[in-house]
Image (tube, rainbow, N blue to C red; front, side, top):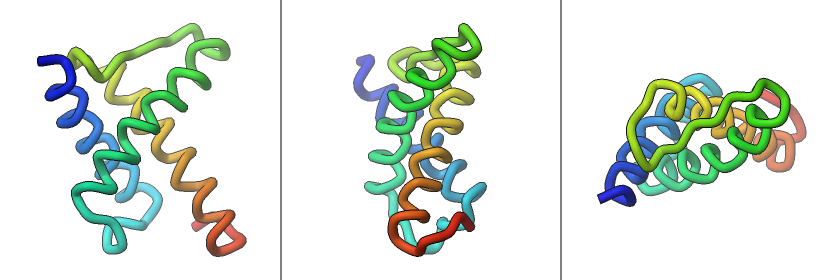
Amino acid sequence: MGWIIALVVGGIAGWLASLLMKRDASMGVFLNIVVGCVGSVIGNAIAGPLLGISGSVQEFSLTGLLVAVLGASVLLGILNLIKRGRLR
């Protein structure tokens, strides 16, 4: 059951991050889920040591969603730098 919640929360986090980074038109549902799940890992790597915050997308929590959106935004920013040479 945890992986279903992780996919749903990852999809929501990826969608919110794509809205924040203005990439919503170029991404589909599958990429939103992938970016959200990978972003959760990146967000936990960033927020854990720096802020002492950790959140998991395997059980729904607001902290986990915010950490996933933060990580997904960082991931999309890095992808924008690689692809376009600038942040959006």
